[in-house]
Image 1 (cartoon, rainbow, N blue to C red):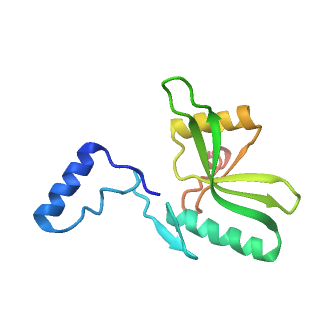
Image 2 (cartoon, one colour):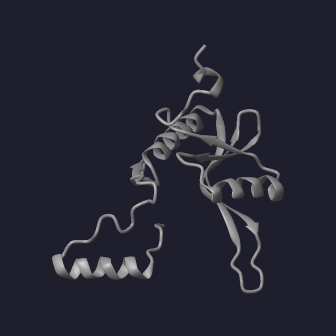
Length: 148
Protein backbone atom coordinates (compact mmCIF):
# COMPACT_ATOMS: atom_id res chain seq x y z
CA UNK A 1 0.00 0.00 0.00
CA UNK A 2 1.49 3.32 -1.04
CA UNK A 3 1.82 6.59 0.79
CA UNK A 4 -1.23 8.87 0.60
CA UNK A 5 -0.91 12.10 -1.32
CA UNK A 6 -1.72 15.46 0.21
CA UNK A 7 -4.68 17.32 -1.24
CA UNK A 8 -2.34 19.68 -3.10
CA UNK A 9 -0.32 16.81 -4.56
CA UNK A 10 -3.48 15.03 -5.66
CA UNK A 11 -4.85 18.17 -7.33
CA UNK A 12 -1.61 18.86 -9.21
CA UNK A 13 -1.38 15.21 -10.30
CA UNK A 14 -4.94 15.31 -11.68
CA UNK A 15 -4.29 18.66 -13.40
CA UNK A 16 -1.19 17.29 -15.09
CA UNK A 17 -3.07 14.15 -16.11
CA UNK A 18 -5.88 16.15 -17.76
CA UNK A 19 -3.39 18.44 -19.53
CA UNK A 20 -0.96 15.84 -20.84
CA UNK A 21 -2.69 12.50 -20.41
CA UNK A 22 0.30 11.29 -18.37
CA UNK A 23 0.46 10.57 -14.68
CA UNK A 24 3.14 12.29 -12.60
CA UNK A 25 5.67 9.57 -11.76
CA UNK A 26 6.96 11.54 -8.78
CA UNK A 27 3.55 11.85 -7.09
CA UNK A 28 3.86 8.57 -5.16
CA UNK A 29 7.63 8.65 -4.82
CA UNK A 30 9.35 7.90 -1.53
CA UNK A 31 10.60 10.95 0.39
CA UNK A 32 14.18 9.57 0.29
CA UNK A 33 14.02 8.92 -3.49
CA UNK A 34 14.07 5.15 -3.01
CA UNK A 35 12.44 3.31 -5.89
CA UNK A 36 9.95 0.55 -5.25
CA UNK A 37 11.34 -2.77 -6.43
CA UNK A 38 9.78 -6.15 -7.10
CA UNK A 39 11.42 -9.41 -6.04
CA UNK A 40 9.84 -12.87 -5.98
CA UNK A 41 6.35 -11.48 -6.56
CA UNK A 42 6.44 -8.87 -3.78
CA UNK A 43 6.95 -5.13 -4.02
CA UNK A 44 9.43 -3.55 -1.60
CA UNK A 45 10.04 0.09 -0.71
CA UNK A 46 13.66 0.03 -1.91
CA UNK A 47 16.13 -2.08 -3.86
CA UNK A 48 18.13 -2.69 -0.68
CA UNK A 49 15.03 -4.01 1.10
CA UNK A 50 14.23 -6.33 -1.80
CA UNK A 51 17.79 -7.71 -1.80
CA UNK A 52 17.59 -8.35 1.93
CA UNK A 53 14.23 -10.09 1.45
CA UNK A 54 15.78 -12.42 -1.14
CA UNK A 55 18.63 -13.18 1.30
CA UNK A 56 16.13 -13.97 4.06
CA UNK A 57 14.10 -16.16 1.70
CA UNK A 58 17.26 -18.17 0.91
CA UNK A 59 17.99 -18.55 4.63
CA UNK A 60 14.41 -19.71 5.11
CA UNK A 61 14.85 -22.35 2.39
CA UNK A 62 18.14 -23.48 4.00
CA UNK A 63 16.43 -23.86 7.39
CA UNK A 64 18.52 -21.13 9.04
CA UNK A 65 15.39 -19.22 10.04
CA UNK A 66 11.65 -19.79 10.24
CA UNK A 67 8.34 -17.94 10.39
CA UNK A 68 9.48 -15.14 8.04
CA UNK A 69 6.89 -12.34 7.87
CA UNK A 70 6.84 -9.03 6.00
CA UNK A 71 5.57 -5.58 7.06
CA UNK A 72 4.52 -6.61 10.58
CA UNK A 73 2.61 -3.92 12.50
CA UNK A 74 3.30 -3.32 16.22
CA UNK A 75 1.05 -1.12 18.39
CA UNK A 76 3.14 1.49 20.24
CA UNK A 77 0.51 3.88 21.60
CA UNK A 78 -3.16 2.86 21.69
CA UNK A 79 -5.95 5.06 20.34
CA UNK A 80 -6.92 7.78 22.77
CA UNK A 81 -9.64 10.38 22.89
CA UNK A 82 -9.22 12.48 19.74
CA UNK A 83 -5.93 10.79 18.75
CA UNK A 84 -5.14 7.91 16.44
CA UNK A 85 -3.06 4.95 17.55
CA UNK A 86 0.68 4.95 16.77
CA UNK A 87 2.29 1.93 15.13
CA UNK A 88 5.72 0.73 14.11
CA UNK A 89 5.84 -1.36 10.92
CA UNK A 90 8.84 -3.68 10.75
CA UNK A 91 10.24 -4.69 7.38
CA UNK A 92 10.78 -8.31 8.47
CA UNK A 93 10.24 -10.55 11.48
CA UNK A 94 11.47 -14.11 11.84
CA UNK A 95 12.77 -16.76 14.25
CA UNK A 96 16.54 -17.32 13.86
CA UNK A 97 18.30 -20.68 14.22
CA UNK A 98 18.89 -20.00 17.95
CA UNK A 99 15.09 -19.60 18.40
CA UNK A 100 15.31 -15.82 18.97
CA UNK A 101 12.48 -13.62 17.69
CA UNK A 102 14.07 -11.02 15.39
CA UNK A 103 12.49 -7.75 14.26
CA UNK A 104 14.53 -6.38 11.37
CA UNK A 105 14.42 -3.05 9.60
CA UNK A 106 16.33 -2.00 6.49
CA UNK A 107 17.62 1.50 7.15
CA UNK A 108 19.06 3.98 4.73
CA UNK A 109 18.35 7.02 6.87
CA UNK A 110 17.44 7.14 10.57
CA UNK A 111 14.80 9.83 10.99
CA UNK A 112 13.87 11.32 14.38
CA UNK A 113 10.48 9.57 14.05
CA UNK A 114 12.20 6.21 13.54
CA UNK A 115 14.51 6.77 16.53
CA UNK A 116 11.51 7.49 18.75
CA UNK A 117 9.64 4.41 17.51
CA UNK A 118 12.76 2.27 18.05
CA UNK A 119 12.85 3.42 21.70
CA UNK A 120 9.12 2.80 22.09
CA UNK A 121 9.52 -0.72 20.70
CA UNK A 122 12.04 -1.42 23.44
CA UNK A 123 9.91 0.22 26.16
CA UNK A 124 6.52 -1.21 25.17
CA UNK A 125 7.41 -4.62 23.72
CA UNK A 126 10.93 -5.23 25.07
CA UNK A 127 12.18 -5.71 21.50
CA UNK A 128 15.48 -4.44 20.09
CA UNK A 129 15.20 -3.71 16.37
CA UNK A 130 17.95 -5.29 14.28
CA UNK A 131 18.94 -2.61 11.76
CA UNK A 132 20.51 -3.54 8.45
CA UNK A 133 21.90 -1.28 5.73
CA UNK A 134 23.04 -1.90 2.20
CA UNK A 135 26.81 -2.34 1.76
CA UNK A 136 26.97 1.00 -0.11
CA UNK A 137 25.56 2.81 2.92
CA UNK A 138 27.67 1.16 5.60
CA UNK A 139 30.18 3.49 7.15
CA UNK A 140 33.44 2.72 8.83
CA UNK A 141 33.46 2.95 12.61
CA UNK A 142 34.85 6.23 13.92
CA UNK A 143 38.01 4.60 15.22
CA UNK A 144 38.87 3.44 11.68
CA UNK A 145 38.41 6.94 10.23
CA UNK A 146 41.05 8.61 12.40
CA UNK A 147 44.37 9.36 10.80
CA UNK A 148 47.40 8.64 12.95
